[in-house]
Image 1 (cartoon, one colour):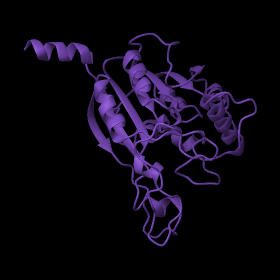
Image 2 (image 1 turned 60 degrees about the horizontal axis):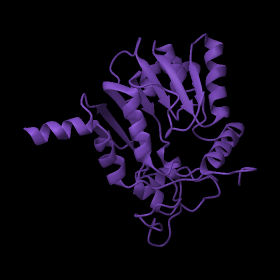
Image 3 (image 1 turned 60 degrees about the vertical axis):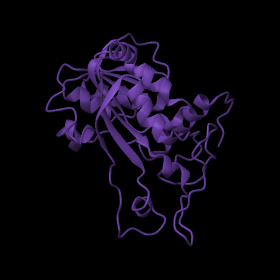
Image 4 (image 1 turned 135 degrees about the vertical axis):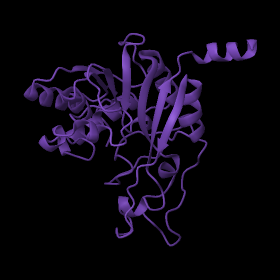
Length: 271
């Protein structure tokens, strides 16, 4: 499933997510009327944003699709969306227009936010998406640039082991089939595996890159949780069964340090 005229991983992933919207595939669901009755609980089930986002400048990064953006806007936030897929952004536009909600929509990649100014957001919210870029450090540095000092960065990522392991169990259970120290894309998958998107180009980011690079980019981690999708009654080979043994995602609450990493290091040396 190669995008016609594809020249890069970005072309391919844009094509795949546009296609997923047309198919109504997982993670392209728009907010429902019920969601608008409790918008913050849907977007932020852990309560990391606090009780209100009214008047806060929020960047929904790689978060198109008509869910996070419109719910945050309905809760009073000033919302900007950056997403690679125009089809996902169209869902944001359509649902926001139907409810009279203002949104700023930008087609672009999460690792190049040059269209945005420095320190122009109070909050950055990023659902699972960093697996689609080869260098997560570029994403973190861009977020560090566009967020204010002490701003919140709430992100989710695919766990490395989940990307290494088989989709279906064998005689010995789910097995590790892919190397950990790798720079090339993961082998493509075909079919409906919920932990991978068929046809997409994905990269494995190690824990050192997920956590260490976030800290080195100027963030302090305040919380880390693993969403639990395990179901002991699920049939073997399903997403819920596999999640009993291999957690698929990790959610991170981080805060931008008031000082840059270089400044912090300089102060430490002088002291």
